[in-house]
Length: 271
Image 1 (cartoon, rainbow, N blue to C red):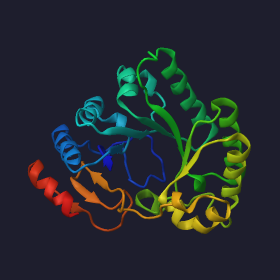
Image 2 (image 1 turned 180 degrees about the horizontal axis):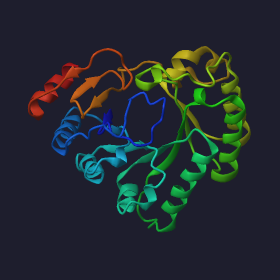
Image 3 (image 1 turned 30 degrees about the vertical axis):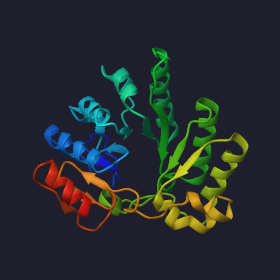
Image 4 (image 1 turned 90 degrees about the horizontal axis):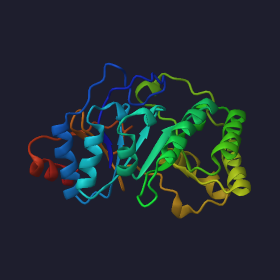
């Protein structure tokens, strides 16, 4: 389940599909605890925490602890390249299964590398720590720059896993004009080159699958690995507004949830 814990963000991405700003609100810790408990009771395995900028939530560490308390896996996506400066950094690394940084340029990859290096400096290797990923939107990067970014990652971060996300015409994204709307499958060829030559690990989201499924199959991606549907194996829970949706970019109206944990659980199961 994708869990939105805040609508606050001060990074100002002009293509933000959640339309998050400095005026956004945080979900209350009471609602979040109620939601996390309910998701555990529903059989949820993993919670992908997002926002806004999730690390800006004043109770971010407490939220991670709550997910662990209810025996679920927590991961989150961030653009906070000063994560290593947070006093809770060590605990965040231990409570998270994975941390994905949104990087769409070489300079952002370099900032992420500083966080990654800091994460290794004081590790107790008898304990498990979060795995780091990069998330990238190829449609806001031209093909030449995409190749340059991947080359930089190979040279500086070796084979860190990368997830490519499809551009979302939602929120601020409805009016933003991407630089690199694909007319052909050049981006697939670029990724395939680094997969074949450098053994880099790539994932792609359902939007890219739905747009490029046949081209991906033509490039020898296993069809069983290509899921292009939303709302079948996952869903989106907005704890700021207490609504549930098929996905975080669904244009269908969400279902409003209210009441105690038992009532919310029943409403969620019906959804």
